[in-house]
Length: 203
Image (cartoon, rainbow, N blue to C red; front, side):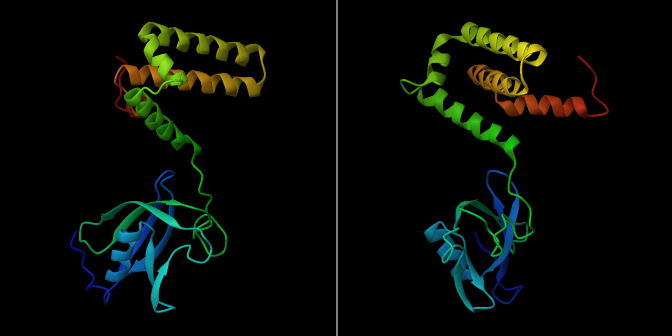
């Protein structure tokens, strides 16, 4: 990509976003050399305006930012860098430079979906998920039904801890069933989002 370093006297802003949680972690600046070192090393490297030198995030703390992707904006003068952080990002010890907690547990569902997709593609031996895929759609659907019943039982007569446990089992087996039919958990999210619209009408 051809980046425009001229607007800010050789520097461009680089917004760092957690690849998993989508939280904005920090903002730094890169010159051309910092950008090229980031590409070469796979670790986010900035140009420190106070130290007047290249600075790899984590070079002292060990809290590196491992690059997943780099996207320029529409004017090619700002970068959005998605990264996996190795620890707290801010020098004050907080997860982000805005003091936010870098936690979004619901987004783990996408990570789980990706994992199940990979199991479906590779079908490794001795994997429980593989055994489910091999059992066929009828067995997978039956398993979803069994987990649904167990979830209902815990909701009515069990403990909150067991309700969460069985609910997690239900969701996992539902994702496996969806995957076997060529769908993902995002397809359910998309359907729910459409239903949330004021213009949605029941089929």
